[in-house]
Length: 153
Image 1 (spheres, rainbow, N blue to C red):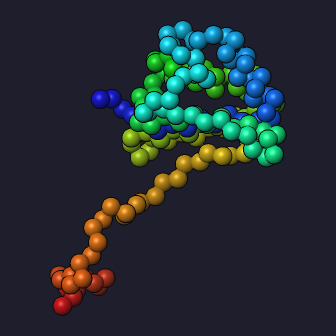
Image 2 (image 1 turned 180 degrees about the horizontal axis):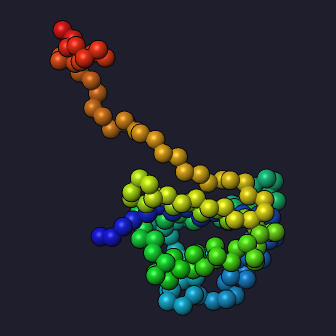
Image 3 (image 1 turned 90 degrees about the horizontal axis):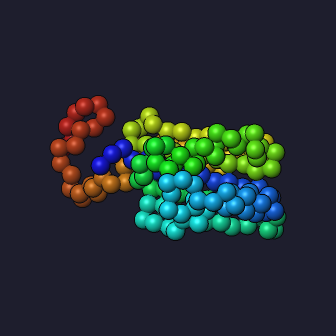
């Protein structure tokens, strides 16, 4: 089945700058090996996106999410985003920000990168132990050890 990751990329900045960025990327055409341009790709079970304005419509936020995806840069769709991140500082750092967060299947496989001059740190990765799937305790539990290691009666 292959190694899977959950990935989120956000791109944001002043509305006119985001619009110009999207237009320039679309003018380049669909990247080689891809069926759709990354900004025109339809949503799938493993990928969704949203675009919205904020702060009195002065700024625009684009959010791209991939769920349980093979994030290998040998795939053209992934190579596009890796390539974009590699040129971000030279091309857009004064006008736009991009944030990238990826969590792999292994507990120590995490990435969180921020690009741009005025990063807002919208994305971060938090790890925690979740006991939400444990069964509820029965009313009359027996054989429970107390904290001293002695059995309760």
